[in-house]
Length: 111
View: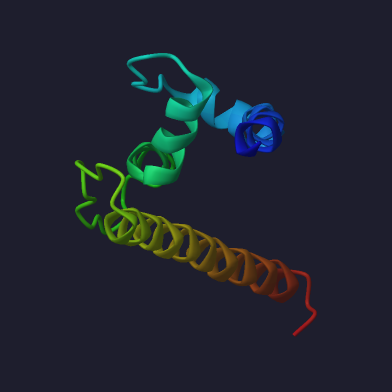
């Protein structure tokens, strides 16, 4: 019963635009090629942290747990590291956007 409900949801998730984009950035290291293995590799956080490091190579890098082995605590730690990296990336971008807008207004005499 569970697989009848879970399989279509898993398939739908793996076909979502964000997951498709993530797959184009690099190769997943799934060994058996099943949809469940792809999903587990994504939610372990290792692959997503590597992508974030490619997007923002100047970020302060925290070590991710490479051997999650279905341990939810390690998975949560990896995903927490990922969330911190994403927040830091967008906070820096927001600051630069604000500085650029202020500079533009200053040059145009708005101040």
